[in-house]
Image (cartoon, rainbow, N blue to C red; front, side, top):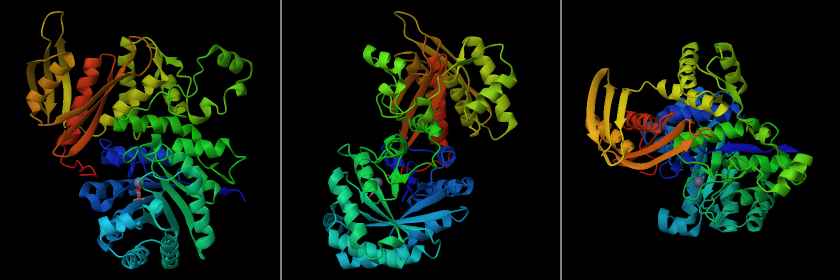
Length: 512
Ligand code: KIV
Ligand code: ZN
């Protein structure tokens, strides 16, 4: 039997529960489209009851995505389920995911409920969710620390009530592979109606075992894995989608299911998109998507790879979407060459206007930087997407003086709701001066939580890509900016973050 392994991505829900990894509605839609392009089966878009902003984001994803199932999370409460049902109305294919804790510690200390009442509430929730859709998932939260007999009773009852997927979460990342795999095998064997539902797993990475536990569960019969791009997620994160997919794909000899429907070449672009939007950089040695994942440093390895690639490589970098980052274009390249390279990279725009805008940015960049690489094009496309979000604050001009022995000074012009405003401010360094000048105009009362700079390509003429994370009254946003001048890139990122935090539709972070 070679079944399909259902890939359920929860980057937009559990991933967003990483402290600081908040996303706007538009950013969620952009990530959801990237996941759809990868042919991910189910996209968990958020927790609609959490806030009006969360509801809007799930609705926007449900309306935008056509080929993947869009899922909304709900506690086992009618009001949560009604909200999820409402948010998913526009989906081609929608799923309600409802959950209640089943471990002794959660039932006693958190829910303060008797096990029999938990069981009844779980059944009621699934029955209620079935009024909205016949695609209902149930999770016994903290299943990894629940009693086997009770878990069997709850799962049998919810399957009878109409749950089509039962998901076994190791909520606190406590399990180890053999034990967790064994748990899944036992559940499937002991629950009389287990053939009526797909068994799923959702593992957290507190002991660094999320992927190992998930794969062990797959060997024992699980046919859905819940995972996130780059392993983002609550605390130490969730199982990384790229590792699950490539593990099953690379070791076909071990798994009796497949991920042949997943377009693996979209893995690296999706990883970059998520890292850029959330400001959570990928560690260089991260499997599959780290910059060193396919780099061979030792002479013995290099020699082996040159003689026969398979000596040290079990996967091909290009199969997961690494491009050679070719020097593609220069100052004299025309619009057609530009357009066709964007197409090869899988970058598309909603309108011809956005393409023209990106081409103009490309020409500007080519004036400053002679060789334009694929990664530069990705950054230009991101900048156009950011602009398309109709920012009400725009950076018009920035001049910063920085001199040995002198206090740096920044002069900034912003356009705020169409009106130009100027300010001059000193600072501890050029970036600090620029930020203070901007803030003296906007009086944003925000707290800077993160400032990070990465070079997009190599060389001192590389564009710098800056991420800025701001917090205000419990709300957290991330801003991005890129430029060959890192002070300007920083100012762009700061303005981008301020636009988000000062916009009325900004969403509460789900943890608040
Ligand atoms: O970790 C967990 O238990 C969850 C559930 C809501 C599935 O995220
Ligand atoms: Zn979780």
